[in-house]
Length: 407
Image 1 (cartoon, one colour):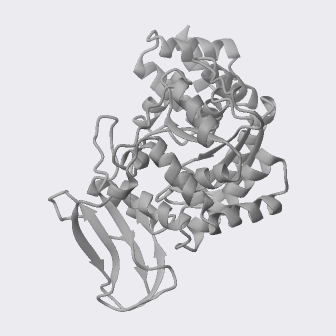
Image 2: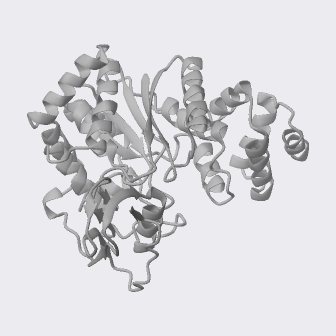
Image 3: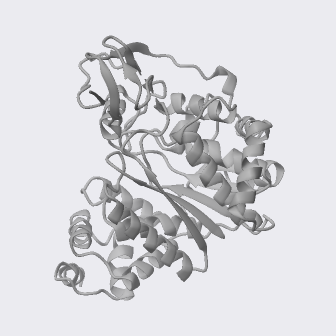
């Protein structure tokens, strides 16, 4: 039966929900082997999925575990997701801004697997901060301060978690139907009413071109409509890193700087756009009115206060966050104008410093990372410091090729 289903997809036939359920739930229950599911996932990557198959798969993922009960929250529940990128610390900025505007944020996030850490890794880099919250703790915190960021529970879309781990090691992460089902199953199981999704596109992202980004955008909105959930999207550039800091502690420090009003540029602009969409959906007001409120709370310090309140509530000690690592500088070897900063090359360097993980068992060095010292368009002189590296890795032979383009 399993071989028939794999063969059917390999030969470009549409599968029924029952067939999808047989193979996927069989995998969750250890009746389907890794090599069989790997072959099936590759067939999906090569031959795609129809909309009806995607809806069915999303439903199977959702119903493989629990649905989070957020009925204790009054009003509209809004969630946010990013498809992931280099230096993407927007959740640390957006969530406190939105919560400070009176829209509760209960977000389940993940650890990173790849070049850089995920939101939970960044939060765990804050000394003492607790990320594994019980449902009772989530409810209490949501009621009292209106913001919770916690790791995904084992019982929320467990099939997606198991499939994702296999996709990550079988070169099947770039299937747009699988990406769409993965994102939406977690958000719907998390019981959000409305969802904002930041779709990253570029060399430092999962999606490399605008055509793929547009297809994913269309699928996410279709799945949302199917489940009667409003979905709004932003497509953002990931050809260069987002912000100046890459690495877990370093990204927390940059997020703090944004909330303090010390940072301008792409990171701030994207954070404001995402926050205003969430506030607009949560309060059912226009995005223009939401943007005014968002900017006001960033300027008057309410967003920063909410972040500090959140960290303290989850037992974090932000005052003792400091970088303990050896420091090296990357210097320009020529004079000219900085034309480009390659996000993928920065990401690979960051991982080699210890800021990411190649397998689930790898430990992240929260101190490791990079601070980019120059912006695209800057005049550069030979010998100028382009970036500062923080690492505890002894091997200093890091690949610095193709990171900075100067001409």
